[in-house]
Image 1 (cartoon, one colour):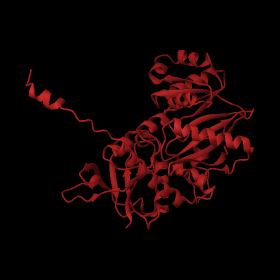
Image 2: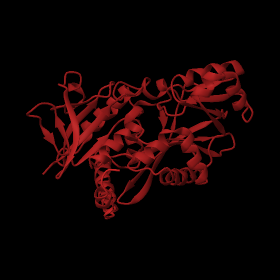
Image 3: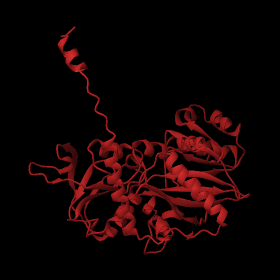
Image 4: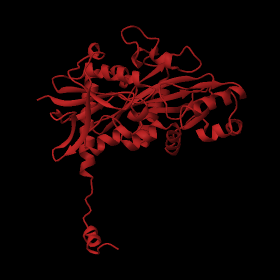
Amino acid sequence: MSKPILVMMGGASAEHEVSVVTGLQALERLDRSAYVPHVIFVAKSGEPFLLPGLRDRTGFSRARRVPVSFGLDGRGGFVRTAGWLGKIIRPYAALLAFHGGLGESGPAQGLLESVEIPFTSASVEGSVVAMNKQLTKLVARDAGIPTVPGVSLFAEDIRANVSAAAEHALASLSLPVIVKPSHFGSSIGIHVAKTRVELEKHLMEASFMDSEAIVESYLDPRTELNCAVRRVNGKVQASEIERPMSRDEILSFADKYQRGGKKTGGSMASLDRELPAKINPATREAIQAMAKRAFLACRCKGMVRIDFILDRNGDAYLNEVNPIPGSLAFYLWEATGVSYTEQLTALIEQAVRDADGLREKRLDYASDIIEKFAATGRQ
């Protein structure tokens, strides 16, 4: 019998539209002989809706939106539509296609964990680490993985004295530098600052976009390389490596989503790329090994994409970890001979195994402290 699957997309995020594209791509490639999809669309306001009957991208704009809530009872987690005669769906798992915002950074994962619905992404812990670029750097360095030199600045400190914030960054870095919000993806808000004036300008911009900003050395020339990592049947695997091609100084939102062909335009699959990347075998093996080490160090689950930068000497640095990458990075696994449908099935089944393992570790530590407290009476 086919198992009910939630395909969750959208959300209160600057990457809302990109998330919808990823979700619809996944919806169309699910194995319908094994799973029955139920699309949960989260509006930019944060309100979740069921889109009943949606099966492909062509029906998205006219799909009916039915408000839903999540719950847990003796039979497990469920989604209920609004109204007295609300429909109840008891999902086998949730396939997450969120990018940025509350969908990728942990809150959505916490909701699903609390109602015991397995999901295809990192846990709350891993999502928080991976979505904060500074925390990612700290964890990676502790695991012996090189990262680009940089400093972190809080938004409140930048707005209080942007000149002092710039001075703090330049005390350990030399111009040019890259300025970026700590929690954003899809290259949103990233700028190269070549002068002190540009640095202060981009710091101030970042302070109004995010609670924290990162300033990093700008490696020039630089080669950007991406590698996906997943866990299947307990084994951590690394994908083929791509070299994304940029028309700008750094890989931009336009490069990623707005310059592809009609067939895949609007998704990471539309990016101009060199796949496999033309790098020497030793570099390829080193990056795949670092990617798998970063996956474990950042407490990731499901499938992530990890981005690296090569400097002029061929040294590799971890750039960032994407806990739910654009298009779920399906093209990187297709380059290794794994179809997108096979990838989705592996993700879903691993999510269920992960949830089962978590339940097995749940500790019920019995004691009589409540009874003793209640027996003391009000004091």
